[in-house]
Length: 146
Figure 1: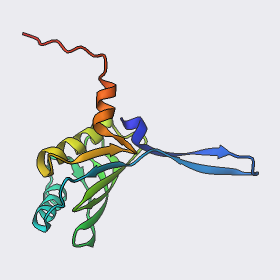
Figure 2: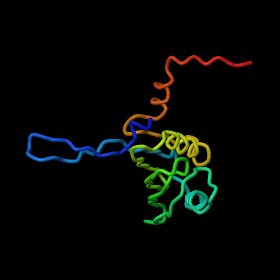
Figure 3: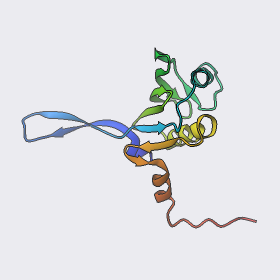
């Protein structure tokens, strides 16, 4: 999961003389099933970024861009790695730099679906998160422990 989502840059030489930077990675996008109400959106921002012990384990100072649009250049408190977020009443987009733990992505999606919108759909790039999880667990047999 994290390897697909990680953003990083590497130098690439092309036929044109010189070297160029190439951006690799994919955004994590979570699309809400229904538009969040203003009160719900405001509470989400407040409870996530104004509380020391929040469920999302994120830290940052929201930059208010409109009544229902916020940017956060923050930190995931799991391993204290940066995370860049755009939060609106319709979606969340996260940019996770190389080296960020995959648990950051899983926790973000899980908490959105648990506390904000159970029907929200998550994508890493153009691949639906559910499909990615299903593919990664294909062939694993789970046996109940009694």
